[in-house]
Length: 437
Ligand code: GDP
Image 1 (tube, rainbow, N blue to C red):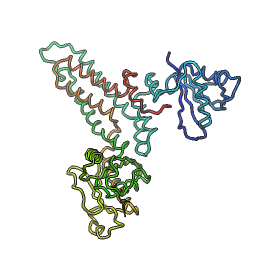
Image 2: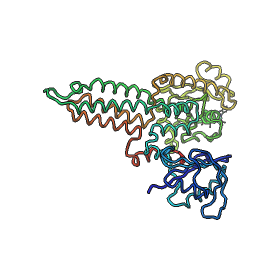
Image 3: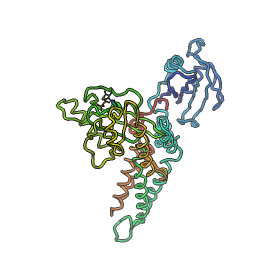
Image 4: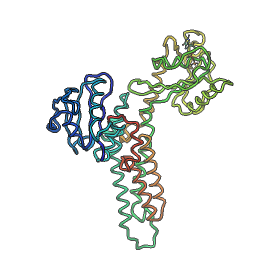
């Protein structure tokens, strides 16, 4: 028998209230065992005393509770939400009370959403969108997530699946009297397939947008040791996350920090200084830096002495002269040719951010207004596969093989919305969801 699950749906910091969610067949039993009363009227907030089970009325807390019998609940199962007082000890008591009951256990990551998908209450695109919404730090991330939840990818997927199924049924209905081969043209599905392929390609144009909004634009520092990369990084991140030191080559690993600038995420990477060295740890750091530089959206080529490292050819790379508090002559010399900053006084740091911001606006503009279809990496990979199967179907001359490609394309779309062997595939995806979702 499937166990009834419970979890803390709110954060576990000190707070006035916490919400405990319960879902599964035993929800009503849980409620009655803990309140020593029958379940209250459904969907009506009701005040109840909660006791430790079988304890002669040893009180845990006095809480509002709502009883939501399935299927009219988030998971589609019988559900209870208890609005307890916040704090550690209250939840610990509920935890021990709930786990002492038969067939009740603490939920896994994303298990409520998983059950909601299995019971047809939501789809995977929406569940992922809710997870993104919970994790959103910037206004852009929030907007993207709620858009995806509200009218996102699930809608075109529905339309596309209908299109594929229509083609499949046309093939099925085709009774071939002629000597012609079964090309998509002869099967009367060519235009439909071309249309689907064009739609998929159009949607895939946006595939970098999700990463851009959620991961942020990638800004990678490059420069010789001691140029002041870590100091600039710290000045931007405004927390002492990198070790700032006088010894050249101290930052051997890559340090990553994300900020929210005017509602957009920017991720900065402080890297190992590039220099000639025999030290193997330093060499490894430089190797990692070079790899990261290839993935950068923007490179900041930082120097303290005006001798910049050679610039990459196919990258957006800006020259940054640091320590201008110390060197007035260099400051004069590079005015207009480099961004002039002082990590020490903070002068010029805002200029870097503003310049990056202009770049973000340019990059995001390209994607905006494109029918609101946005794909995360997982969804894009599936859609790419669907697109390739449609492309192959268009080339084929055999009814069976065309049908098979269409079936595969349809499977990819089904996987996007989670219409799949749930236990196998979903487990992986939900492992990074929070527990109470
Ligand atoms: P990195 O090796 O490029 O990461 O350089 P660090 O950030 O570790 O800086 C090297 C040294 O330069 C440290 O002693 C910093 O305090 C100093 N430094 C960094 N930025 C500035 C600056 O703008 N002005 C001055 N005067 N010193 C700086």
